[in-house]
Length: 317
Image 1 (cartoon, helix red, strand yellow):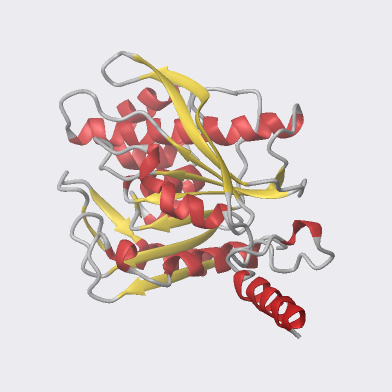
Image 2 (cartoon, rainbow, N blue to C red):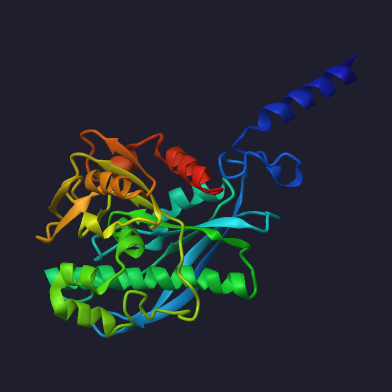
C-alpha cells in the first residue's frame, strides 16, 4: 500500500512538473507544438559572435557582434531564424536589451540573434540620424548574410533559409523596416536627396559592406515594435510580410506621421504602414495599443505570445 502511494505521488509530481513551458518535444513523435509553444526549458546562448565590421560615422573601425540564442540539445535541422536589433535612437543601446524576447522565442524552438550595430559617434544631426539608419541596415544585412553563409557551408545553426525574419524595437524596428522595404535609389533620394544617394552608394549601396557580401540577405518577414519608415510608400507588392505593435500615444516614434525621436525628421509609423501593406497585397498584422506610449510593448502581457503566433502562422506560407 505504501509503495503504491509513493508510486502514485511520483507520477503526479512528474505530470505537474511537465508543463507546456518545460516539455521538450524533440525526442517525441508529436512535434506539433514546436514554434507555437514554450517547449524548451533551457537555452544555449553564445555571446559576442563576430559577424562583420565597418567604419563608424566618426571614422573608427568597429567589429560587429551578436548573441545567438538556441534551444538546448535541439536536434531539429531546419529551424527558423529571427535577427533582432535593439532600440536607443541610434545613439545608445546594446544587444543585451533584446534578451527577454530572444529568450522567449528561443524557448519555442526558434534560433534568435540579437545584434550590435554602428551607433552615432559624432555630433547628432538630421543627416547623421539618416546615415546611422542606413548604416544599421547594412549591419543587419551582414548579420543575415552570416547565417546564409552558414547554411551554405558549415550549417552549424541548422537554419531554414526560407524562414528568416528580422525585427527590433524602436530604432531597431526602424532598421528592420528599412531593411525590408528600402530598395531603390529613388527611395534613398526621398530620404536625403542626391547627396544621400551618393553616401549610400559609396558605402556599398543598400546592401552595404559590413561583411559576408557574397551571400544573399533574403528574409521572409519583419517584426516591427514601435518603429517607422521614412515613407509608407516604400512598401510594395511581393515584399516581406509585416507584424507591428505600436501605441497610439507614442511621442518618440509616431503611430501615424510625425517627428521621430525629437530629430525633426518626419516618418510614417505602424498605423500608416499596416494599411499601406494591405493595400499593395503584403500580408500584415497590426496590434494597436490604445493610449500606449513608446514603451507600450514592454507593458503588454500578451505581445510576446502574439509575435510568436504570427511567426508560426507564416512558417509554412
